Amino acid sequence: MSIKDEVNYLKNELSGDEKLLESAFKLESLYKKYKLPIWGAVVAVLLFFVVSTGMDALRQSRLEAANQALLTLQKNPADTQAKALLKEKDPALYELFTFSQAAAHKDMKALSALETSKNDVVADMSRYSVGAIAKKPVDSTYYKELSYLEEAYSAIKSGHTKIAKEKLELIDTRSPLATFAKLLEHTTLKAQ
Image (cartoon, rainbow, N blue to C red; front, side, top):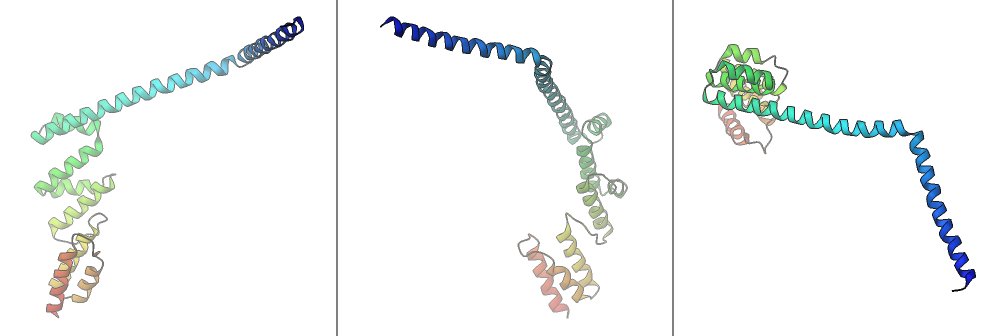
């Protein structure tokens, strides 16, 4: 290797080192300029993970306590301490448990109270159960087809076969109640 080649090689090496040093200085100046936002972002990310982990642990603890209270209530429905704990930890599950107990015992007072529930499913099922116990048709979102079937049966009993047919036509042919609807439809043919 000639001296000229060595000088060029050293120039290139120094130039590369120079560029590396220059970018290190730029990085340092950027760090000094944006030191607070960088550390703020790091702290925010760490804080987010700590808070989300804490919230998940708290949510899990509430669920476990609610589940334990529900298991206790399934064994002993009269346990007031477990009822209070379930109501505190998971109000929606408490309403569902209250509905199941009221429906099983045909407790009209409890079912009527649940008709105003914020949970649409519990409120609708309670309205339907009150109507079923009172033997009155009720417009239900979740029991719509069963409601149509009951309305058709009531119409057949009162001699209104045209109304009964209209209600039975509202039941989907793929519904589990379609067989009962067909049987009732045959009843309307015989009633004419």
